[in-house]
Image 1 (cartoon, helix red, strand yellow):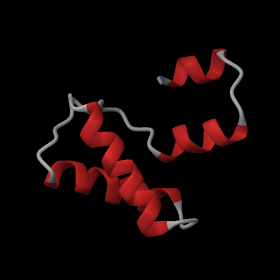
Image 2: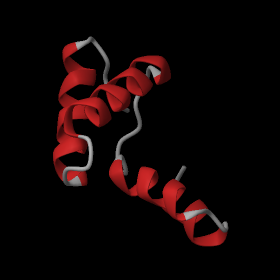
Image 3: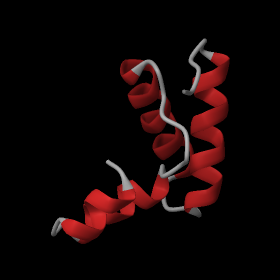
Length: 69
């Protein structure tokens, strides 16, 4: 979901939190690996800062062989 879609659409707080958590300029090439990486970050950090989760998800994704556009 791109930022303009967020601005134009009405989304719930939970959805906005998830989008803000993993918002980045680049887009993952393998959706399945990215989803697994996001889940691993949520499992590891729980309610910690979103910046830490985002960095961990990106690192996990790259370590598992994923790349960004």
